[in-house]
Each structure stands twice: as structure tokens, then as C-alpha cells.
Image (cartoon, rainbow, N blue to C red; front, side, top):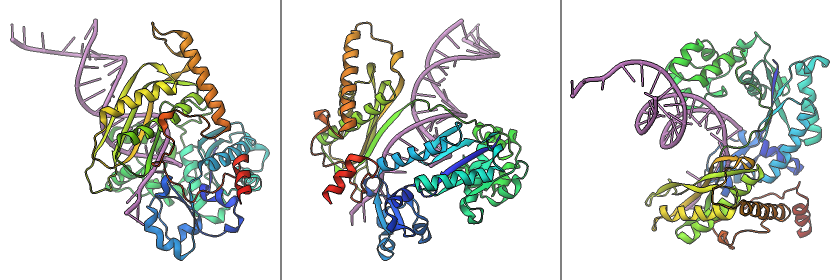
Length: 422
DNA sequence: TCTGGGGTCCTAGGACCC
DNA sequence: TCTGGGGTCCTAGGACCC
């Protein structure tokens, strides 16, 4: 097998830069929702020592001193850029697994035969993406997904490979010895620590442990990782995008929330949003979970609670979902706390066509509900916030803030509006 | 002053069955 | 009074990923 992992460099920062050529080679950071933490940095920002995931106020001085460009995260822009990126990758091979917003695995087995080598093919992919998307990419190639991932890391660390690095089968040792444990896909913080206490430090050390021993002392996941590091494919490419098994919508508030009424607005909005996602994959939910919590950083009283609410029957109807969610909220709400965050999770999802109807419910009710919901979704696809339930509230003072938001250059109407206003 | 959001998979342990 | 062996299903929690 020949697997390539294509990964955009500093994806969010690169997306912003595509539309702001004046920021070429300038430091850029992207903030999380609510402008809280730094979630992406351009190479220049990394070089200034700005850490990943730190709260933005801790980097305030560096940002001001070095005139770092700061953006709120603009997910509709990044999503649109991601779609373009993926469709270009799909023009190279039908065997693409979209792994995240900026990453995809490509199965190049047999495909690069026309090209002189995998590396040349990778360079071709890279040049095409740069030309049509303006995005810098790194590509790692290897006999397994785990090795392709590691090769990608290596390509990023070593500019001399010009963005494409391949591990030849049987030649893994050089790469493995150069990579620390924690850089291995599937080895997170906890595992790294545990393995280090056993005296391991590089990917090579891990690869040398017999898989059966790993299975005995850890689990099947790490066993697969070890086998993959040794060139034995254990994790296949996933071609078809499966429906989600759970759908979450949760947000921190822009300021602390105290009243039940405000929490009701938030829960109602989040449930509506989750229900939209549910319908877009044509599923129904049988259970809804809601949670509310204070901030762990506050010194006042702490409170966090959640509740699962079984629904009378599987549904995609926002009205029923919101009704149930609000009922659940009343059971867990306690006055006197400064709430920082709330969220909703839809669980026990199944396909709409497989729904087992209640013996006493009328089929026509659910058909009418589906039609109503589809109509609302169609309108909202054209007009953001076109139609919504009154329980979502109008002012929504609690809604997250995104003060440094760039325009959505790829959404025509919003962009035109932006230009007109200017 | 200010600290993100959305997912998947596996395992252990309990309840229950024959 | 004593009580075996094998299995499934569900859930909570932990670890990982981006």
C-alpha cells in the first residue's frame, strides 16, 4: 500500500492570508469561539513563541509588540476553503478519506505508476493546490496511515524536502528514530507519559516492542499503532462518510449568565442548531442530553450538571426537541450560580426511514412535521436566521462574541454586503 | 477583565440470561 | 445449606483525534 497524508500548513491562518495578501510573511493568530484561546498560528507567530491553545490575554504583549494580525475563527470561510481543497484532491484519485477540515488520506497504491515516483506525484498535488487554492500543503507518504502521518510531520520539520516526504517500505528506521513518542498518531499525553516512565522516548522505541506485549499491557488501539509503525497496515481508508452517531452543540457565553430565562434561550438555540444538523444527515434522535456549568476559572461557587431526556419517539422535530430540552433544563437549574457554558447533545440517532412509529401516533403528524422542518431549513439556507423558534430569544446578549471576524469571502451575499458597506 | 468546540472508539464492570 | 460456567447488553468514563 502507498498512503499519502495531505495536510494544510497552519490551515486557518493560511485561509485568512489567501484573502489578505498584505499579510504574507506577517504573524497571524486565530482565536477560538468567544475570542478566548489561540487555536491557530502562522509560522511567524509560532516563531515569536506564541503557544498553542493559550488564552489570548496571556499573549497580549507579544501581539501588540509585533503587530500580530488577530482573527476570530470564521468557520464558514474555513469550511468553504476545505471543500475546495478536498475536491482538488479528489481530482487526483477517487480514493480519498477526508479526515478533518484540513487533512485527507489518499490511497496512491497503483496510482502513481504513470508518474516517475510518489514524491513527484506529491509535488504535483502540492503545486496544484497552491495554484488553485493558494494553500500551502505538506504531504507524507508511507505504507500505512500511521507512517504517512509521521512522514507528514517530518516533511513539516524539514523544509529541504519541499513539503513532501516519503518513507520507503523497509526504510522506516531513520524516520522512527527522529520522531519523539508524542508525535505518533494515537499516542496522546497520558500514553506518552506512561511509555516514558517505561524508558521509551522515540517512535522507534515503541515500534520495537512486540505487539502482543502491547496488547496485554495496553489495548488493541496501541497494538495497531505499533504494527502500523512497522509497516503492517491495520487501519483502512474510510471512503464513505458515515452519519454521525451523536450531534453536539455547545458554547461558552460571552458573559456570565444567571437567570433560568437566559439559559432557556441558549438551550433552545443550541437545540435548534443541533436539530438542523440532525436533519441535514436525515436522522432522528431518541434521546437528548443537556448540560450547564459554571467556569472552572471562577472563584465563586462551582456547579455542573447534565441530564439525559428520553423522547416519546425518535424525532427530528425542533419543536419537540426544544420542548424536551427545556423540561430537562428546569430539573437541573439551580439559582445563584454564574453559568459560563451550556450545551446539547442528540444521541441514539437512526435514519429517518428506519423509524419505528409509536402505536398511537398518526403517521401524518410526522410527515407534516418533516415538511415543516424541511421548509424552515430551506429558508434558513438562503437567509441566515430567517426563521427560528421564539424561545431562542431575539436579543441573545449571551451569544458568543467574535470581534475580529473576517468577512466570508466565499459566500457571495455576505461578501457583497461587506463590500457595499465599505 | 479575558481560558473553544465537536467528535470516535475501547474497556471495565454491573445486570441479567440460561 | 451448599452453588458453575458461559454469555450478552448496557453504561460510564477515559483516552484519543482535529
